[in-house]
Length: 91
Length: 250
Image (cartoon, rainbow over all chains, first blue to last red; front, side):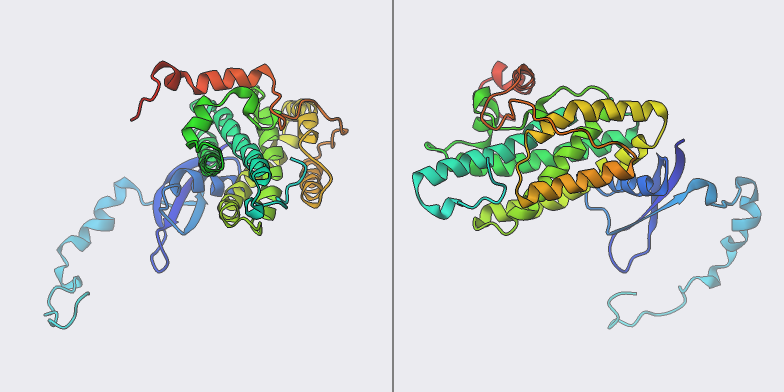
């Protein structure tokens, strides 16, 4: 019985695992190895997570308005009102 | 190839030693080259997309090993030959691969059994060669041992799954083991690496609740350049393009 797994790859140390796609596998061990072969064979990462797709609770498209739209007009939540000093290379 | 320890490295200095090292390298190289080709026959035909990619990855690892080893063996040849000369133009009776890897694919269980046996064998071989006196061979072995460790694990997982899976998967594994085991025995001697290879395989089969087949040695082993017609067939296919367009590059 093959189930669907979601795959997360950490591209390098210090970065977070990011979702890259999904695959089928009969168990977690196989899912991890399949993920290695399908998603990291071109040196895309240093760490892998696989999660059964059924374990993910996702927001519904129907809730898009109430979930996400209220954030649209709250510009003050973005740190755009600061002058970045010249001496600071990266923010 | 009586020893897997490569006691007389190319630094032995005599022409005789270079010749025997060349033969030894060809054995390693041809195992990888022919096994790679057999695995590549699964591309677009594996049980699922994920396994398709996994087998293709393993095939590519093996092809990479074959290229490094053939390149080295070619430099020890007088006059010097390239990896392509050795892969595409060498007569079949100069191939030193194990017959185990030239046998036709059959079903998925056969491929898994053969991969289990080959990877177990290569793993011990490369692990030992990491400390070979020949630095170039040691470097090739150090790179390859990581790859075959993964191949070995891939085959182990499938063996466990198929061995203790359904009655049908178990039956197929038993049939495959019975057919391939004598060709595996033909490869093994009694040195430490070979014993440890047997031990590892026996453990995996035990965990998979598969019975260890009785030892029987098939002939030829392939190491002396004597092969089955299956090698001619695989070489003919592998050489189709170079035969039609000699010297072509792309």
